[in-house]
Length: 161
Length: 157
Image 1 (cartoon, rainbow over the protein chains, first blue to last red):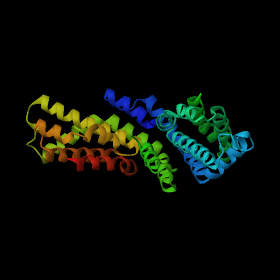
Image 2: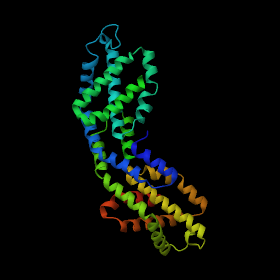
Image 3: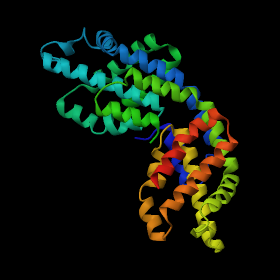
Image 4: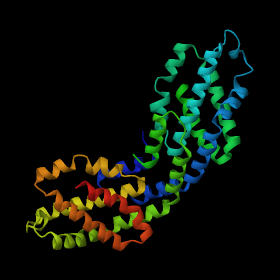
């Protein structure tokens, strides 16, 4: 995966130079945002199960999708949905820590839309649940960190569209 | 790959969020951000001086070596490489791990110098001299961020 730091080091190395002032400025901003990122990741990882439950309650639980004939019925498929939502949350958290979305492309989005289409998973409902997850996460980590998580959850949404 | 990417890859491998130990490690890394930038800037600004003074110290300990053989083009090439290693140490300070040094400057390094006929034992002394000169230009706190990578470099020869 790429991350913010290597994405400035690698081009400098290709030219055989030290990091120039704009690259150092970018790193300084990233370092300064580190505390916010680590705090948010701490809150998200300790509250992950609760975040997933709330996300489902907000977006999927009370709809037809959980009834016979729906894509979250029977329990096996309900559990698959929980698992996928927890992947989204975990990989968005990784990307937020790295301040780089490439891990989402490599580990989550690669082939995901096709897989969902094959399995008959309604993509609009997945997107709805990811948007609900954004709200739930923001309530727990605050607006600033919530926006940062939103960048990467939005990336998953746009990868599914 | 930086410390951040390294810790994320480990967690991904184990299918879990980062552990509290790993998160603390990242927090410690970020806390020293300003100092990391200062160290990288000092290494960049003083590269030439570190190489020049380092060579003098090196030759006094190890006079019979390609860079001191009276052939200017050989000296220039050896000193250029030493400058490159200082640059890689600066990348490591910013990345928080020794991956930049390993990936760019250590993987294959022995084969290269053996093929060039440069004695590895001499290079080890040369790299030690660079570290000593760099240490003299930095505060203890600054050098604490760079020393592990100079040490990694020295150990590799």
